[in-house]
Length: 114
Image 1 (cartoon, rainbow, N blue to C red):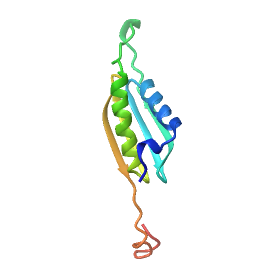
Image 2 (cartoon, rainbow, N blue to C red):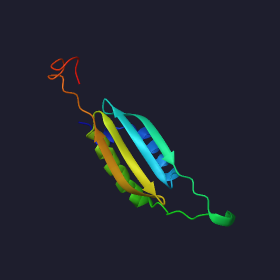
Image 3 (cartoon, rainbow, N blue to C red):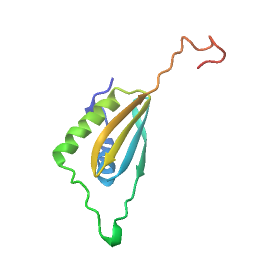
Image 4 (cartoon, helix red, strand yellow):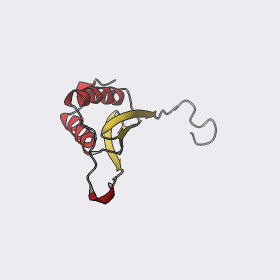
């Protein structure tokens, strides 16, 4: 199992920048072999009425540090799967973790495998 500090700094920076860039939407971190191999970003773009600009929630450096630590610890426990980060009004409101596991001892029991 990896420790959050084992991830390259570029992974930390890319995740942090992606979180800062999204105000409404989600980020999906795809993990294979205990490495982040892909980041998908889905963003909702809201248009304010009559040309006024919407103000979004301000992300604090301390809040980002806590969230980054939580995200990296979730990734460290994951060999295959994904972490979904949901963001509303510039704030992270939810983390979802989906883990994929293989069961080689069952392979071939019912056909070609799972």
